[in-house]
Length: 137
Image (tube, rainbow, N blue to C red; front, side, top):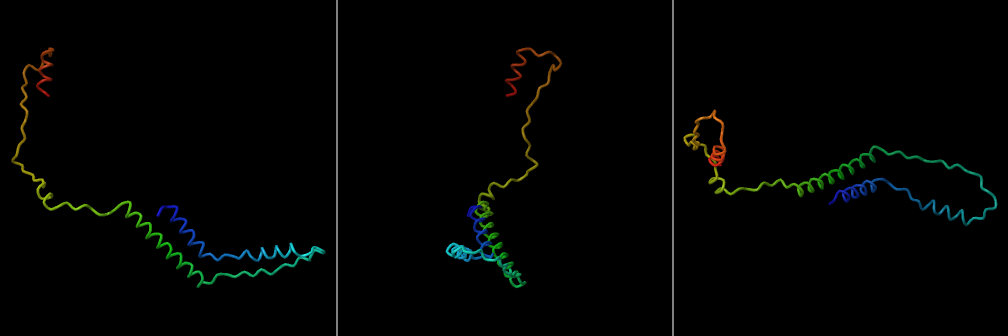
């Protein structure tokens, strides 16, 4: 899943947890007002607004739902990471690893280049420079 798909999925899950009010009552009231004759304005009556508070049980249910959804999102995220960065290491066959094993042997000495040092303080001629470049390839 792409990032946007995950976010829209998460948003839809959160929206499903929040109870929605029904706007149908307002539409019906608006229709009734439009149909009723407007002979005399009705006195304004204040309706008592009843506020209901969430109980601990309701909050715990919502918390459990959110925790399960967060766990689902984390699982999807880990799956995406596994697809992008697989943790599997490639196994090297035993034959190759044994044949190419590097072993240190201190007895083996490397060849050293012989350096002839004579008349170092004299000024080099063109012939000396050419011979020096040919010898030091």
